[in-house]
Image (tube, rainbow, N blue to C red; front, side, top):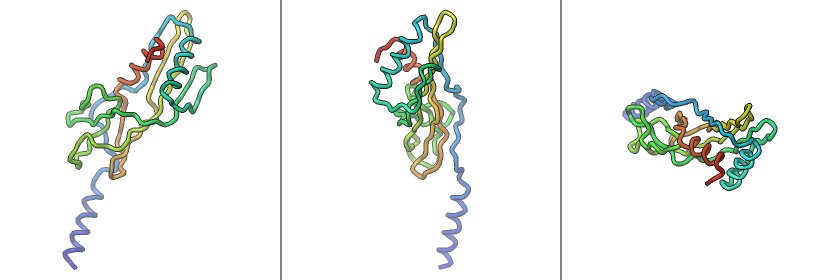
Length: 167
């Protein structure tokens, strides 16, 4: 019985020492990507609406006058685990998440979720389109929060598709 109490006390002590949030080691951009185009605001706006419709994304906010549109919460896969030296293990991943040092498979994390926000605004002789991943969140199988940041891959793809109107 005494041995069981000691084992339980050790397990409790060791589990309380583990961090409740896993943090990234590398430095990543702030996640706001913009592009200027000579196309008019209305044609860009139509491309964005078409893109949201084609992707079957729910829209949680839409305001044509201010040029803001945001999706509801979506799963952002593919995702990537951060390698030990602070670089994403997959350069084409949409997000980078902190590696869990206590897990045998470093690329295993729970679902990465967030929303896509876009803004279109008219400048003097051009239109500026901005895209960002917002409200990013991730938990692992132990229900611990894992820091997650955008790599910019998805935003750059979206900017091109939204401006050109292509899939």
